[in-house]
Image (spheres, helix red, strand yellow):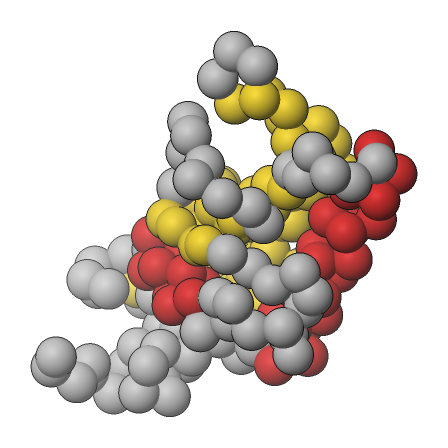
Length: 167
């Protein structure tokens, strides 16, 4: 792996989402992080889930401020959604909802406490700042007969780049 350039801020939601996948993957099967533990993490929402709890990390909206400055510098708002799914036929509806909501709150707190200035694997800043701005509970259907308790966590970050700069 090649080290990034010293100027590492990004306007790419795909870069931020991939980094979040890396960070959450470290907590798969970690009961100290959450019990029951995360069983899987992937980039992008999935049609089928092999096991739960499972977290799908997907780029959402990206908005550049208008107009740019005379130097073509723009501020960029990046959104990433973390979709958490949980199902366990041995547990009641109420217990499944509680488990899902608690894990979502653990993930939210993890990013808000530890990653306000999200960095890459080398410690270089990817965004100026970011945090979870929304946590939405729901029920999701995957396939014909699979219902999951679900939570969508919206993380929003702020970055700044020139329009002419590759990220």
